[in-house]
Amino acid sequence: MALIQETAFLIRKEIKIEWRQKYAIGGILLYVLSTVFVVYTAFKTLEPQVWNTMFWIIVLFASVNAIAKSFVQENSSRQLYYYTLASPNAIIFSKIIYNTGLLLLLSALSFGVFSLVAGNPVKSSLEFFVAVFLGSMGFSITFTFISAIAAKASNSATLMAILSFPIVIPIILTLLKISANALRLMQDSSVWKDMLILVAIDFILLAVTFILFPFLWRD
Amino acid sequence: MRSNWWKILGVLILLYVFIVGMLVPLKPGITSAQPSVLQAGEVVTMTISGYNTFFTKSTDHRAWIKADDTHALAASAIKVLNDQQLEASFRLPTYLPSDEKRLTASLLIDNSFDGATVIPGNLFLQQDSTNQAMGSQAWQTSSIGELHSKSGMSFPFRAILYETIRNTYFHVSLWLAMVILLITSLVFSIRYLSTTNPIDDYKAMSFTSSGLLFGVMGITTGMIWAKDTWGTYWTWEEVKMNMTAIALLIYMAYFVLRSSFEDMEKRARIAAVYNIFAFAALIPLIYVVPRLTDSLHPGSGGNPAFGGEDLDNTMRMVFYPAVIGWTLIGVWISSLIYRARKLEEQLYDD
Image (cartoon, rainbow over all chains, first blue to last red; front, side, top):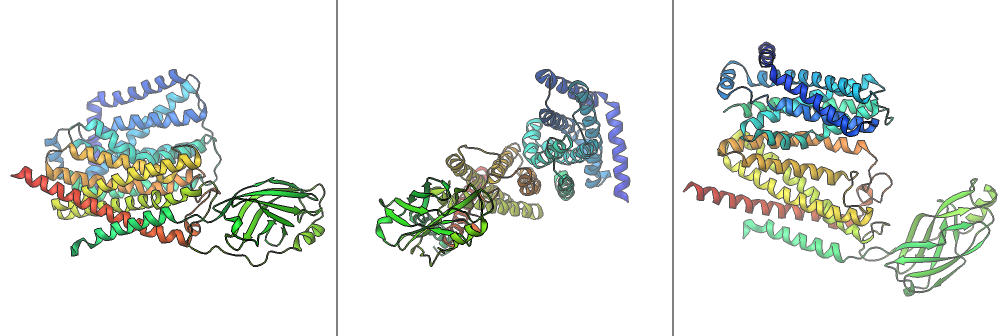
């Protein structure tokens, strides 16, 4: 019970901080817009195959950028203060939930702008949005945890990318397959099985995060 | 000396793997049979080319065109040209044992020195009109009798792979040894988090280093093999190679992460956490990648395979020791890295 209360409180805190420093969220949203436009001007017409790949690449890079700041935007003394107040699991849980929301917003925006300029080839919206939801969750868990690691080191921007990209490959591959199916680039009746695999990956990562974060947090 | 027995064992096993793995010959096989398209009702003289065969050493040659398990046609005459070439004449009946106009068949040859060899599904039979009953009867008259088997130790002969089948003892066993070393490193990382003993961290680091080395060697042998058999150095369809590449990326990042900390305790703790997290994140890949495409890799999609039932007993006699031998050498390398690391640490302390 205490965990849920603490988590809810910390999520409110995250939103409040975000709201006060609007440049962070504004920066990320503008990042998505600029990237989409760069991709569009480079390709002009996007085949569904390319659309699918580019969409996830944009979301991937925007997500890394959005989440990289998770543990560095507040200074270490304030983090120490949180540590005395809340359990480490509440802290990581609140950040993961908050980041999932942020990534959902970000993916929705990428999808909207991308469809506007490059057309919308999605044939099965349900499958596509399930992919977006599960993908946001997977990215959020992985990147939040890696940003906690990278924040402990000095050159965290480079570390964030090199530590997280290889790890996120299984998620990306499954996402590309599900959304290729949603775009009807391929027909696979067992697409629900892939979604289950994605759910399983998300759960494994979440469980490992819960076990490991207390070790990472104490300083 | 007594505590070093496993190092000697490792070297001896690898010596055995290199000598036996490289010197034991392949089983005799057929590389081609010309012509491969045969018309029912004709008399054909087929030139058969063998690999590792000694046709002149025996006189009791027999050959069959095998349509299926119960229907086969024996050669009417066989002439030996040289050790690698054989001419077999077949008098094809008017009808084939099938209600289709086309039929794929296998060629089977047998003699007392080389034993029986088969080239599966390489012949294409044609007929203008069908009569399954008569065809069936005509093809049944010459059933395959007792076959010889080659004496002595030999590795299986497989089209496309040929002599490169020996790479199983290097590419595949290096990959397995890498996995074993990385799992050992994972165990030490977990132990570090519970004991916070720096020794466990050094051990985890040493096993990661040797695992990385084996990964590089596994990828190199895999690339050479892929170039030889599939014509390209890198292919997405090769699960082991791509997994190794991702593992290499992760563990190289592990070393970058380690080098970015000054504080030893912090470095050990965070490296251990990353090691565990990365390993957990990688496990799903084993399930994910094979689901994405039909693999080119031996063992799937009709490719020549040597895993599972295809790894024959002679190969097992070399393959399993190879895995153990490489692992022992990996542990030895790790222990050297670990000792060097510990000395370095002592040097800096003074």
